[in-house]
Image 1 (cartoon, rainbow, N blue to C red):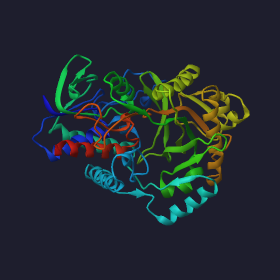
Image 2 (tube, rainbow, N blue to C red):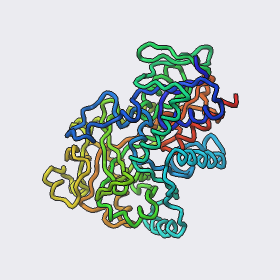
Image 3 (cartoon, rainbow, N blue to C red):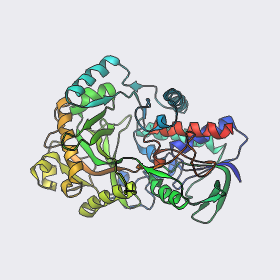
Image 4 (cartoon, rainbow, N blue to C red):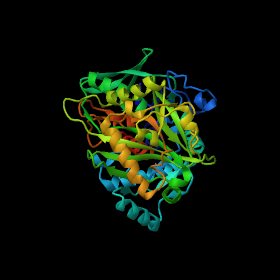
Length: 457
């Protein structure tokens, strides 16, 4: 029996635990995580395997620190990027939470450098974006880098090791709910863990489980927009005038053909493209390091589609599109932008005879037009041409497009303003997997907020 049980040791779960141990050090707290401790996590692709071995639990996605552990550790220090916390809390409150959370990252070893604070740099780039019909969202960014991010999360793990119970390699299976109040949960090996309060923070890897389990318990869900797209890789000098000033530029475009929103996401200057495995589905992402550089920059282009009734399976939709790419390529598919425009598939020779060396060597050359729906593909092409106006070279025939990139935070739990489920008392749901956030800083802030609410009760 615990005072608080936390499912998931990503940033939302970690920061909830940090705040509870500060406010109620005498409480019994347990964190249950399906993956490994951070020092034991690894990716075979990164260690020289030619193809992803499709681990049952992807080392890049599961384990202490969540999917963000091996990301490049970007903290976007504004409520305008990375989630929906302002739907539940006043903006000023969210700003205070972000500042508090950022200070905790610094306490545990984050770098003190922040990009995007020079208003003159911001004004010049914003003007160029406006002329290209792009909207620039100003987002000061603290960049940790993958290796420094791992160090910060290791420090948090070591700190909490002495204060809470941490169970790794333990998978939550089902909730225990009695009289519309949560009592705990059952693990896959049939262990029952009881708690007065339960925080579910499963991250994107656990979003599908959360959706199915909440449906079974008649806990309300709504559909976020479905984000599906590609990972773009190009020579770093193309975006250097922007990334040197802002590091990450959040750019939004409305496709003239269909009016759909397309946005840049997770920009990685001098970074690398990586493959991820969501329960047997290969998807693509990007990282960058603090002390190691490649010759390329990569970023995602995501097309947001908001579906209406009777559509109720946004995560399954994203999985379906990703599976098509897996079916054609055996994993990740890559295509040159010029080949896409010419209506032909890329081949190994065409990829080789380019000015860009792919950082993801296991991707299979092919044709993305056989995978992405026409509407999304059209929006991506139009966005690349718009980006070319502020960063000439984006729409080069050599620019590489990897597919599919999809974000599994499209199912969103119906919550009160305290981030508690409407139907079940003492059950709180936070982070990316709950559709509440979509980035490190707001996921962390949601953990702090829920911890304060529980401790106040």
